[in-house]
Image (cartoon, rainbow over all chains, first blue to last red; front, side, top):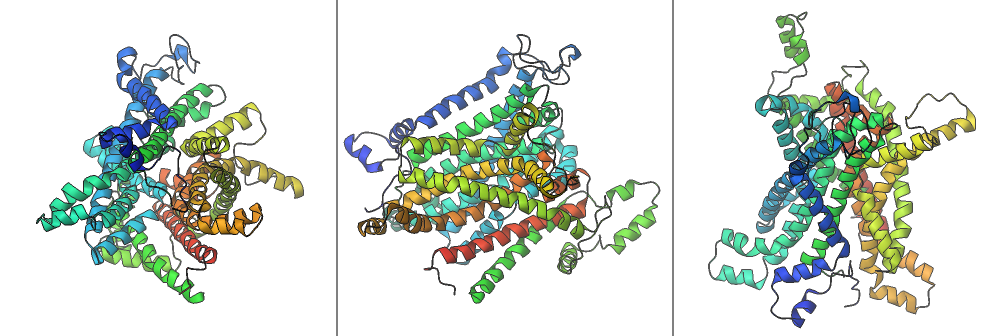
Length: 313
Length: 319
């Protein structure tokens, strides 16, 4: 082929690896390719450490997030407070661990919502031709041109109080943030799935299933969808990062979780007025968001090489 | 050409209608009530509140309210701000130029960084330069804009004291000093947005150039004995830019989101900070109008991208 520069050195031809060693499962093959993306492996390790710290942190650091200590306000890192304290003398390590749990939970749940909606829309559009497809793609394009952050702010402004009353402040904000991020991020997945469906539904194995009398539903669920999932996993990974950034942004603008819930974005929001005498307070949560997002983005890149090794023409 | 333009505008109109419909539905479904505060105010008798609701048509069916709202918007009657008692369109017109200036400069900065870096990285794929550039691009778009903003304030305003971190509209200086102050206070917001966009665009440009760099027509151009510069600029980059233009247009919603954050951090008096202030003050007419204006701008930029697309790729006929 004339032009074939791979997007990344690790994305080699899928056939090359299989031809050399025959008895390698697709999963092993993907793992082999993923390992060759150095930054993706580093990202996995870093993210693994962050997740471990956030999930198991309270076992090793059982300090309350809201223990106010006016004798230790705005202190830098010390043995009593490894990451320092905020303006009320609350321990930042404990607050960071708590905030990380929320950020990661929001990221993962929002990703699942987005992937679910995206796969649903993309699959329906991809399997049905004609007007249904055209209408769904028009809606997709419409959502793509919506200004996400302003709309997110408006929706949260309008619905926050009602949900707060209905299910409590934290759960209410969680539902609304996850729901809205999910609903505003499904479009890339829908487009990917539709494109995959268009090529897959003409493949021989789907034709064979059709010839054997498989219903449309069975063709989609058993034959087409599993083969279309590679790019979806990649897009989903990147959606986690995008959702974490969006959630932090909302909290940073003071419109996310309530003030007593220390998400990473909220910590930054509180810290920004004390930037000149307590820079550690702002730097740590910011660095945590940055590291998480960077690792997830690198993992997504590695997964793209591993699962979606399309050659660039 | 004008026919093509007309057709594109006709395609954009339904999208605008769709966006206005989504916005209005969100507002109509919301449990809150623009007259909520009025109802809680003991000085306003319930009859007056009911008469006001009647007068403003709050009890009409939703579709009727939508049609009324839309026709008023089209006539330029955007209502007035509950807080500052100024007409919304006046308020937006005051703020819009600043936002466009910041966004425009940051996009230019991003392109100045991304084009050479992306092209150079793709022409020598997997070289040390490529690896460093790719990693830096990843870092660039993984850094949340609010964090970059705080970092810049910490370094350049607090530690070094070179740049002001609050944007001021009333600078008491004239002539050169006036413009210099303006440039100084614009540097940080533009850099924050520009670096983020630069990271994204570098990756776009790199992969777009990778797509065309080994195609036969490039080899032909080299075989004709054209200078490398000409091959790269006239043959490779021009073709590689076609998908990049589309991707930039698709980035616009994210750019406006970034502008909201940046304006909020640096207190830039643009429509982004207007939106946040309006939300914090429950100023519904301003919120609606700003969101709608941003949506219109996004559609407008998509339109411009379509036109650029036709200019870059003559194979796309203006039919």
